[in-house]
Image (cartoon, rainbow, N blue to C red; front, side, top):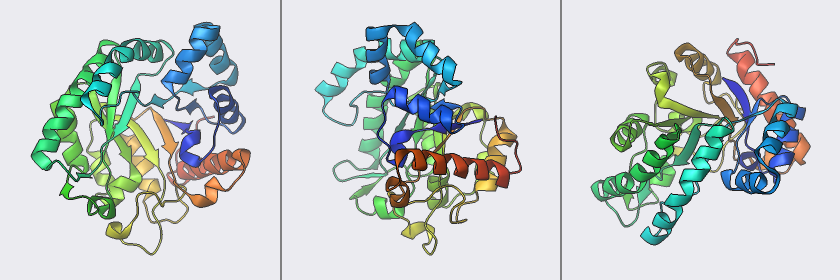
Amino acid sequence: MYPNLNTGAIGVKATFGEAVELAARHGFKGIDFSIEEVEKIVDDKGEAHVRKLLSDAGVRLGAWGPPVNWRTDEASWRADLPLLVRRAALARELGSDRATTWIMPGDNDRDFDTNYAFHLERLRPVAELLGRQECRLGLEWVGPKTLRDARRYPFVHTMDGMRKLAADIGGNVGLLVDIFHLYTSHADVAAVRDLPVKEVVNVHVNDAIAGRTPDEQLDNERALPGETGVCDIAGFMQALAAIGYDGPVTVEPFSQRVREMSPDDAVRATANSLRRAWAFAKLPFPE
């Protein structure tokens, strides 16, 4: 596994080229990216330009979000699907086979069964199109009870529940495992050790807010990994290593403190938090 940068997750606005430069400067080995932005660069300057940019920086592509409006009206969803074919092929050609999306843990209009059927209907075609290009789809469960309680009908919000939904959608569908959502859904790192590595498409790390129980945590208030010590980052990283996970590890802190830093300082703080995470787990940091 390798340290991966998502600039948007830490409140840094950066173009693809700027993100590559920031990642290289601070020791990241990969970056998350917008496939739409990369597609435009390729159309303008060619695929070789992107490959050279990444190669010169020693940075690879991490994960990307399928630009398909599957949550909204049917017409928008259907219009986006044909565009996914070329974009998935491009991502795969450039070295990324990991696409991810998050699943809201509740809904005000659809009860559980209706919502389950809705997700199958909308995400199966997405997964199928990704699979044609040998790409995988990772689904992120969202754990906080505070977010679930704000909706009329609860939905999937645990690892086991998301594993079932993923399996029902398709064979190339797995999980985006976020340590915060593991904690807020009342699971621990032992659950990660029991996962087949093929089911882990992507990983997010962060920390929960001290002084709050799992059920009191707010989805958009977190900290850098290892910052508060609430989440077992050492055990989490050790579990990932034990199952043989070799993909990106990305910080998603939703931290106002980090957002208020300069872009360079925010990326530096994020990189340092990952180095600490590897150190806490007594794992060699990828250099």
